[in-house]
Image 1 (cartoon, rainbow, N blue to C red):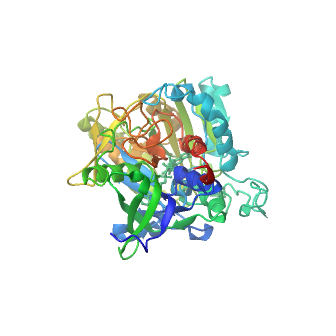
Image 2 (cartoon, rainbow, N blue to C red):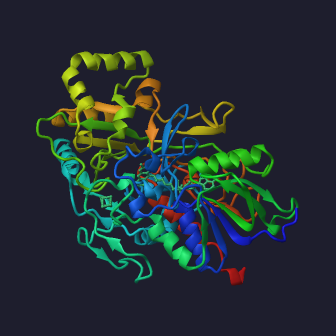
Image 3 (tube, helix red, strand yellow):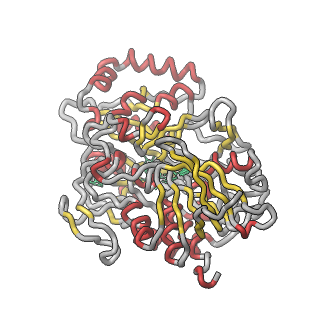
Amino acid sequence: MDNKNIEEYDYVIIGSGFGGSVSALRLAEKGYRVLVIEKGKWFKAKDFPKTNWNLKKWLWEPRLKLHGFFKMTYLNHVTVLSGVGVGGGSLTYANTLPVPKKDFFNSGSWVGLKDWEKELQPHYDLAYNMLGAEENPYFGPADELIKELSVDLNREKDFDTTKVAVHFGESGKTVDDPYFNGKGPERTGCIHCGACMTGCRHNAKNTLDKNYLYLAQQLGVTIIAEHEVFDVLPINDTNEEDGYEVFFKSSTGKQKKKTVIAKNIIFSGGVMGTVPLLLKLKEKKSLPNLSEMIGCNIRTNNESLLLLTSTEKNPKDYTKGIAIGSILHIDKNSHLEPVRYGKGSSFFKMLTIPSVQHKLAIVRILGVFGILFKAPIKLLKTIFTTKYSTRTTVLLFMQTLDSTLRFKLGKVTQLKTVKESVEAPSGFIPEASKLAKILGKKVKAIPYSNFADVLLGTPTTAHILGGAVMGEDKTKGVIDKDNKVFGYKNMYVCDGSMISANPGVNPSLSITAITELAMSKIPNKENN
Ligand SMILES: Cc1cc2nc3c(=O)[nH]c(=O)nc-3n(C[C@H](O)[C@H](O)[C@H](O)COP(=O)(O)OP(=O)(O)OC[C@H]3O[C@@H](n4cnc5c(N)ncnc54)[C@H](O)[C@@H]3O)c2cc1C
Ligand code: SF4
């Protein structure tokens, strides 16, 4: 192929989520010419939907001409929620940035490769600063409910506010960049409307397009949105130093193919982008030397998502606050966070049914009918309330305990999951169910789950991780301790798929910190 007229970059980054954005800024600072290719769209505050009933603006499903930023993927053993757009999952995430407990640094396939806790500490601090993390200063009724639970459980000391990527300042007041000595964009103080997960329309949420990507663009980084990378080929089979051809096509319009040349590649498409892409590149022999471990060690946070819709006569307004304003540490392994959507965002009512937890599907289904007979009024009130969003709190329960799955390319569906030798993430976490029942009694609510959790017995996760994990060598992982891909030169994975153990808490801060560490190992361009 004649490469004379094809644009050449030092680094091409595939995907603009947490891993991709950190990589873009740090490489530009080191003097490299960087291109970011992102499948989703650019979003400004006014582009976000008022509620999640505006499916066109909220959901990402290009086959149905839905070009929003929130994606749901139903797989055999898990339902995955993820983000798509310039800024990746930061557009839809709940801004919460906890540091994992010690176990995370001392378990999984990366154990012993470095003293992770020590090496990552300064990068966690840096990540906090870059993401504009502040302590949530306001508790809404859902946080008060969890606080009350902490008293009931005698765990008051374990109830805490969250550290979140939100500018609080003076509510509703716009100020010049409060984070980067004036180099960043202006922000407006949070108005505690609870709508963070349908996109902040008030310019208060510190999404990646307002920090890492904004600063990267100032240093000359090019971002091509609405384009999906589908192939990566070494230019010279015997010398990868010559670089790679990267092939991409429009993801929202006519699928005209384009090519650029990259000396180095960073895969940052998140687990739902990077893992299927690597599996395809290996299968179709574009990158045959990739590890056989691609797709292995997929983890969730061992989560359980349960919804409580209050049927009280005069319920409190549970939309008040930020998406996740507090956390209760239930025990050494478990955490509970109350999650909220903004006013009017009641789409999930369509996808949830009363939660019945049991291994046997027939028992679960009969259990749902049982609830219908036992509490018909409550059930009907939940279904027909016109104030679903203000009455509803989502309980996000997470555990550090480990369980894994494997992703494979499917014949019928693009992607499928299979079980690994250890336990798969379960849709049934008795502790979560117990807490939901206690809280349900307080607000006169029946706990609900995603219909797939109840009918198929599979959990729902917003925290899918792994699939291109670190290891000692190619037989144990896809990348090494510095995120370099085994089997190829000048190739890295920096996103949630590199996460090699269960953090047990929301993972974006860790993805940011680990990418910061990986980027710190790359020399400046002039020294290279
Ligand atoms: C509703 C919700 C709430 C959440 N809340 C929190 C929270 O409070 N705290 C927290 O820590 N985490 C939260 N998460 C999880 C968090 O969003 C993810 O863990 C995080 O975004 C993963 O970062 P990443 O770097 O792996 O990539 P992502 O952020 O997933 O970004 C990857 C990007 O790559 C793009 N891409 C993929 N494939 C290609 C391709 N082939 N070509 C071009 N582009 C491609 C995608 O469109 C996407 O924009 C939440 C997630 C959801 C869905
Ligand atoms: S609570 Fe509302 S204003 Fe505050 S960050 Fe979330 S969406 Fe923005």
